[in-house]
Image (cartoon, rainbow, N blue to C red; front, side, top):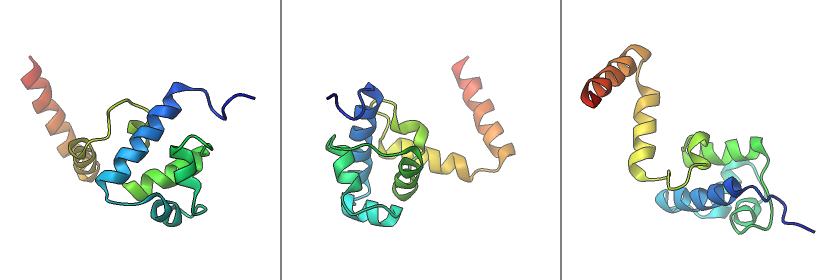
Length: 108
């Protein structure tokens, strides 16, 4: 029988959840509890013994305050990227457009 999930992005997600938990100084049991999951759900996921459904992964990301879009990207979970995401999400749309326009101007 094969492993529950053979997609390499799942291993990336496991590593990124591990990193996000460390950055948040949280253990897997606390994350699972706050996400409304069984006590061992997150630790079993990161150890490769189980999978998480998409809704449960969303809950875990909410607890860790990380965008789900970063979870599947290698080496994407850093304190700076998490802070940047939080800042961008809190910006009103017109301010975000100003930021992106300024960035575009720097790239030229």
